[in-house]
Amino acid sequence: MVIKPKVRGFICTTAHPDGCRALVKEQIEYVKAQPHAANGPKKVLVIGASMGYGLASRITAAYSFGAATIGVIFDRAASGSRTATSGWYNTAAFEEFANADGLYAKSINGDAYSEEIKNSTIELIKKDLGKVDCVIYSLAAPRRTAPDGTLYTSVLKTVGEPYTNKTIDLKTKTVSDITVEPATEEEINATVKVMGGEDWKLWIDALRAADAIEDDAVTVAYSYIGPMITHPMYADGSIGKAKDDLFAAAKEMTAEGKAKAYISVNKALVTQSSAAIPIVPLYIGILFKVMKEQGCHEGCIEQMCRMFNEKLYSPQVLTDDENRIRMDDLEMQEQVQSEVDKLWADITTENIGECADIDGYFEDFYKLFGFGADGVDYDADTDAEVCIPSCK
Ligand code: NAD
Image (cartoon, rainbow, N blue to C red; front, side, top):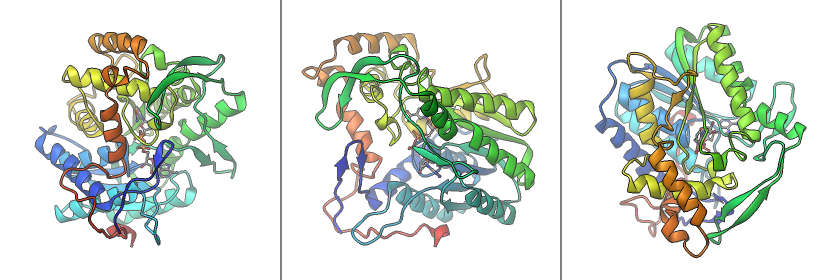
């Protein structure tokens, strides 16, 4: 079939297999061309491996260090007139390239929060790899069923006070004020249950109990801090409470000797998850313009390649005073943020094209679903049914 993007709100309901494949290939080529740290991980589990930061982590582990990777994904194959999810196509492409390059790569498709998926992942590790030496925890999910069967739904709200600031309507590309209401206590707790550290700890405990993780293994989960304008929505909001809990989990796991656990504070980027946060996409549009003009813009693959090679696997793990890896170092530079502040104050619907890189934002948004890749004929017929080699 000929596959075109069908956008609804902040998601696209179609994905392009050839585009996803081309974009995975592009990320692989990028990593291959970068200098690599002398020592790196050899057997890596990536939880949330099909998109965004998780996919970039998997590609970097494989192509910087030749690591064997197992990816846990939660994606849908094509059926009838529906395409597969882009995460499905990305994973199929990654496995195909990795296998052709002689690298071990297998994936487990299902809910990473469930005990069943933890068990089948551990079974696969034991059978094929023995133990893993690195676990990347990169889930971004709207809901979680906890082990006791309770379903928790996360919210993207403030804590305490409502917050009003500018936002972009992604459909009409207009700027207007939005007021984000505070989350209730129950909503905050639910967000912590979904995006906090509990499930990360359950994974590491399960791997330890099964003797499927090396004694000196490293584990990393991802967070965001950002500038003041985003704080009420993010760092000080309901998601920020969950990230505080994730950080506490890292400290706890390290202190208890379960793993060397780190939080990497990453750059704000266009992913399926960040598109859903009010105010943040407009900030990202302005940030992209400034960072591209100043020559320091990065995407997921540049961030993860630098994280693994220059921070996590440098002779000593490079962290800030609080033991966090700071991949937002370039985003938070004074010369970047002062320029963002000026543009933020000035931006309106009328001058949006001058104040923000809206084209760049949408280019990245469409690429999440495999649209806009170089060298792909989007008018050509293509087969939407693609197999993930290890998920047959
Ligand atoms: P993403 O939406 O691109 O990727 C999330 C991944 O999690 C996808 O592969 C998805 O399939 C998978 N997933 C979701 N629910 C799952 C489940 N139940 N079981 C198995 N897999 C599941 O998101 P992202 O932006 O790459 O986010 C990854 C992490 O990075 C998150 O912790 C996020 O908060 C953090 N982060 C994101 C940004 C940003 O700007 N995008 C910045 C800093 C940190």
